[in-house]
Length: 183
Image 1 (cartoon, one colour):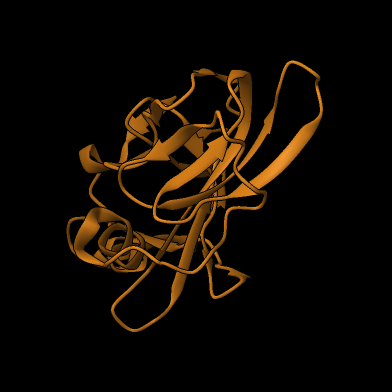
Image 2: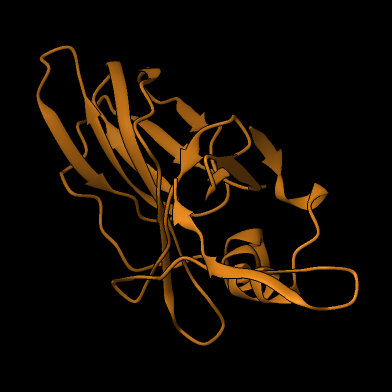
């Protein structure tokens, strides 16, 4: 059974745990300018871009060679051709200098790059927090604006623990506490 977290009442601890991600990736924090284009741009290059943040992308071209490339100023230069994006990791620094990253699950996102043109990926914020409940397990994930899934958060190179939850009855008696599993 899949439920949207906003339709389920949980204590503030969940919202507080996720607030850092939302505020960092919502545009309130400036994008990171660290990161380099991982290869030299061909003279007939086109560009792959993301509106909201810098990113790392794992992709394959027509030759089926897998490449991991890092954006600078939200863009990557690519030779013209057809590409399949397998994964994207969105990246931003918050106002305290913490580096936030949120890697996607497998995407299978197809793009065609043309000389001198920019293709903007339709991924990332706004995020929807999705809660899945089955057999007593609660998993959560994040969905980006195109429905792509993200499963965990990295801050300064460390995977963050999933948020905890507390379920109470109407009198405030604690019925269950635990941690979500990343889904």
